[in-house]
Length: 498
Image (cartoon, helix red, strand yellow):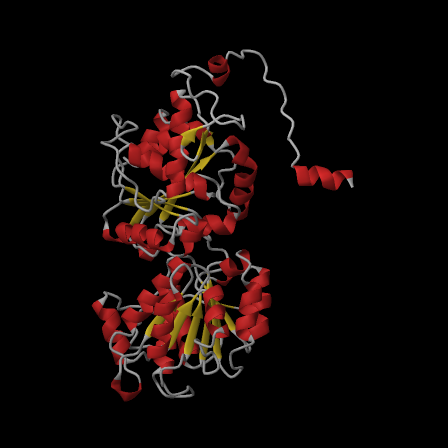
């Protein structure tokens, strides 16, 4: 493994990147490469296999995206751009798929393929209809970005041709292993040519990642953009941990969201149900909030993410899946409402803030039953906070450390509707009707064919009963009704006799 440090300030043009890509990046305000980009691009542009490792938010997407676009359009050692896929980027989540596609499409704005058509970047992911993605592939897809499941589906159906690839990238490979995608990755690898360039990028590089790399890469160079002793988290992110009671966490979050200088904020939970509940509670307190989790449909998730990026909402509650797909530079606060599963998930969560050299604040609320897991995370990352101070929503040190005004309360305005809320279905309406009927105390009445009915075969014995009377009272029988015997039909009785 090579551990290097950047000592000079270079530009993308100095690194040998095509003028069209440099122009597109300049229009987005990107002129100088980050460390991981500067260190990996010379090797990647030369066609070598690369394993890139850098902290979250340090530009890994362009570190593989720029060389990828540069090489498939250079005509050197790659196949002609005929509309069949020449580069494939595999990502673990839908949100990351959309983010990577957007970044690559922006960098490829001025690139052209054969016959003068624009270079196409197509995203392939689940949760969306197949037809538009099939049409995009048929129209020509030079670069495909996708999640493993949908990629395999379209490949098996014959719509996605993987035999002409020149480049393969695995982004956030550690997350793909955590989500159980390794068998799918192996199936994809069996369908693509061996004479290709391969790149693997991730913020963390556990042993299984290195093992995976050896199965499909050719003498890769492992490059870390930081020194081995550097922290896994951003130095520009100030971290706080408080021991909090579960019933007081929403109150604490409500006050943290009123801290001075608080901008776009992400709140992470471990479960989908908790994510939706927190979003609903904060919306009731007047905050502009959205939710992103697995119980929501893809359209609802995209709507919430778009509202967050556009500033229509400034609080996004999400599960860990979203930690890999949100790339917004101006997130000021990250709140861990629940402790993540391990230190790697913690790194990815708080990596949403303090990005691109900006400062950020990460707040972790540790419940009593979460303390053992937090102790393990603290020890693994060297945070030196193994026993967080017991804190409540009215604790003075919470207000002082996070810059919360003394007059802050748990509510800031009228209730709002959270973005990304699960739409109500007909079944939900039926449940609500039943629960309302149960609360009202109204007796349930048996009907047959829309008419009141009893259990007597002779019809409705309670027809003459007044409202509020029971059938027994109407017939004069107030005791326990005798057990009725089922009469056998004559044919049936004869059969038994025989």
